[in-house]
Every structure is written in C-alpha cells, then in structure tokens.
Image 1 (cartoon, rainbow, N blue to C red):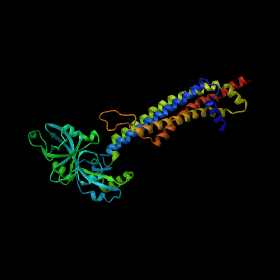
Image 2: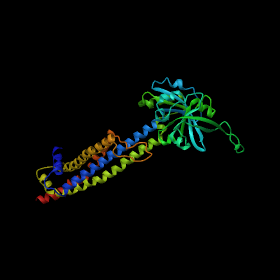
Image 3: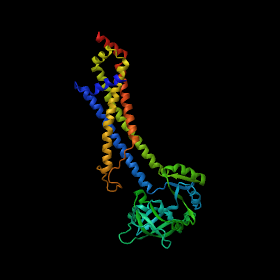
Image 4: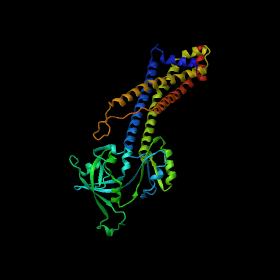
Length: 412
C-alpha cells in the first residue's frame, strides 16, 4: 500500500503546476473542514443545552419516584422496607393535588405539594430560593413556599412582609351532581407565604410547597400520600436500584427514574440530535461531490502520468488504490482542520460565553456548550466513510480495462 499512498499524496499536495485541479483539491478539503467544524459546534451546543435542561429539571425532579399504578393515594408504610436497599439515601413521602389560589382578586391554578422534613436533605428546590426561607414545618402555621411565576400571577408583595393566600381545594369525598352547584364542594384554606423559589417557568408557575401534614389536612387525606421521592447515593446505579425497589413494592406501584419522569423531554432531545446528524451528513455528502469531480478530472489530466506508471509495470489495482487514497487523504485533512477549529471555537465559547442568547426571560446568558468524545468519533467516521465512497467510483473508472486499453493505444 506504500506506492498508492505515495502517488495519492503527491497528486494532492504537490506544489508544482498550480492548476484548477489544485484549486479543486483545496476547495474539497475546505468544504469538508467547514462541514466538520460546523457539525462539532452545533452538536456541542445541543450537548450543552441538553446538560443545562437536565440540570434544571434535576433541581426539581428526584432520582426515583414511586406512585400508585392507578394514580390513587397510598398509605405511608413502605419507607422502612425501601431503606433496606443500600443505594437509597433519602426517602421523602409527598402528597400533591391541584388547587385554586387566590389573592386580592387574582387567581392562579397550581399544584400544592406537601413534603416532610426529609425533603431538605434531597437538595432540591431548597437551594433555589430567591426570597425567604424554607420554613415549612412550623405546626402552628400553614407555611408555604411558592414559585416565582405564582408570585407574579397573584401579585404578592414580598418587599417587606409576605402575604397570606387562599387555597380552594375540591372536596373529592363528595360526589358532585348538577343539584349541588350552589353547595360547598370545596375547602377553603389560608396559607402563609414564607418564601419564593425559581427554577424554570414550568415549575415556578405551577407549584407551591407546604408541609406534608398541612397538605394532608387541606386535601382531607390523613395518613395518605401520593408517593415517595428518593435520592440515591450513586446515581449511576439508578436502574439496578429501580429494579430492587420494584421487587419490594410489587406490581401495584410504578417506579420511575428521573429520565422516565420527563420521558417526553428526553426523547425530544435525542430526536433533535439525530436530525442534526442527518442534516449535516447530507451536507457532507454534497460536499463530497467535490471529491468525486476532482478525481474524475484528475484521471483525465493525469492520463500521461498513469500511462507512464503502466509502462513501468504498475498494476491496475495500484492505480485504483491511489485514487481511493486521494479521497481518503482529502477527508482526513478536512477532518483534522475541521476538528481543530470546531473544538477550539467550542472551548472558547465554553470558557468565555462570547455568543450571548440575549433573551430577557432566558435562564442562561450564553449558549451552553459541551464537546463529547463520542461526537468526535462519529463525525470522523462519517466524513471518512463519505470521502471514501466518493472516491471508489472514479478509481474504478480510472483502473477499468477500457481506460487501460485506451492508454496502451496512446503509448503505442
């Protein structure tokens, strides 16, 4: 393989006789380099956005969540059994349901979520307070933490003292009929706002937190819960721990990992990345046409050189490999240049954030970015495969019997 590789490198990188062929070689390398660099940068941005979204959602979602298979309330009696699993760190029973919140004539529909003191050890929401303190467990008062979106929706003033809000919860123990429209079918509760959290608009506008006892009283569900939220010691063993818990709780309960809780989001992120791969692969395929036409033109221009090689006893297979190696060398050169600039630009963005998002309500200031080795490997493979395939057909034409006979006639 040494001779074909030497011939290929000479044809591509020779500094003599600068012609249109040389320009097309440079253009082919440049187009592959630009495509490779763009693919690295775009995929790294997707990786960064994916990591940012996951980080945001992990500030709200637990590692594992246990709920009843039919969505009904359950009794709080499984925690001790689940704690026997070594990887389980914190178990928090919770109860949640919808309610109508009211303050000074303004109304917002929200979930009231009740948690016990173990929730503080989960490290979620507690670290996202923007105002007040996570002081929910004072049994003498119905304290609550509200999302920032609910604060704005209800027009709550927190500059001096927090205000109380009214929560209307449907009494599900009463069977509703048309004749009961004027009856009292809801429970009215005063809740004392003691803090505000901010994570993401979807959570900030739809959730308030209170103590488990307060929520059970509001929903009239004494000793009942919606399920358990679990923090793990080692998140890498989430699937194994999930299976261990399933063996304990049985088929009447659903055990969901953090990726299954937001399954739709994770599927969208994966689909978007596949679309990016597909689009840029098509762009690289179009770029590889330059290699195809380059090698076709080169086979015509280098007819005299090829005839000399044949006269020296070079086999057709050697000429065929020489043209294939030209496409491969163009691809490798484009990959090296593209990877260099793509990774450098990505790392600069990662360190400095010089490209800003510039949206007033954005939770991040600059485009997040993360370079992954798997993307580099896949992009390198795609470019190499495309450039190699683009070289095969011209190499077959150049080394064909018809072309060989035509060259022999010219020699004679």
